[in-house]
Length: 200
Length: 200
DNA sequence: GGAGTTTGTTAATGATGATTAACATCCGAG
DNA sequence: CTCGGATGTTAATCATCATTAACAAACTCC
Image (cartoon, rainbow over all chains, first blue to last red; front, top):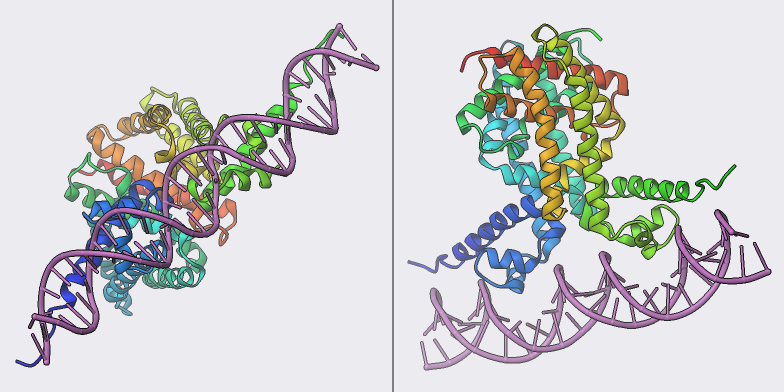
């Protein structure tokens, strides 16, 4: 019965609404192709109202990218936790399904994450890159258990290639059902990683 | 010994220079992130000089995208000309090597091609999309000979996924030599396409 | 050796757009 | 009530461009 919160909920909602709308717009037209007005309009308020929630347009993008990279990294760390070679295969499956699920559920976020890193201020860019690197390293760790003979540089390049494959979702949207697409991407990605054991 | 050309060469060179410089800048910072001044500076002339060669910034991007799509489509048509199922496998190899060669040689063009279609005026956008579609269809035709049981929608999605894999080049630059990267991408892409025969 | 075309240059011009100011509303707490 | 904070609104600011004007050098061809 003492004084409690009722205040913060609306703010949180607005912020989330704005981030979501902005993600869609950034994905469709690119960071510089979207104005503050556009974003405001997309959530039904107009223009400078955004400054009540974010310190600026760059800050908005920064938060978006940090959130995406952090979610992927967290998910990666959670799913890859399998220092056991016996289950490395299961860990890879988990990483794959997790990434596919994310990509199919949030195509706009994937697109923004791939395209807009350059528009973020230096310091945050480093943070995002660090999170991305950590996520990649989760994959590389699992892959190196499956393919001990393969040099890490090759595993890293292969991981990026698989991300490119999985992240193609936003470009080939619509033709297949999400389930069919998930199956297809999973099968292709697994197959794509199999030749890693082959000697150069 | 009669009057001949000496006029057009410099113009052509300038245009090409500008297109190349602009491609690099667009790839690095995005269409809206690059100013006419930037592009001019990159070729050693300043600003509005570009209007002697292009009618505007959009026209420049338009020409760039049309050129890329047309080169890919032409290359696709040339390499896939193999209505013969016996050699469909060779045709796929040719398409793969051709695309990989292009992606490794022109990472900036690949990046621009993937990112900036939205910034082109409607009419040209349709033309670019048409060329892209034709290129994809070359792949789908070859793939459908290799996997007759696979529905076209699935083949199209798979093609986009392979493009995503191959076009990951600009993101994972540096770690591997171009040859090693080409081999890796080729092996991964071929493997990725093999599960297409599998029933759903 | 000079008229005309090609390329450039440096000042406008005009929009667009991010950010800030100044001024309302709404709502919960005391 | 009514004060204060949270949210919005609209009307400045202030920059940053793309694009155009007006003017110059260079080079071609006669």
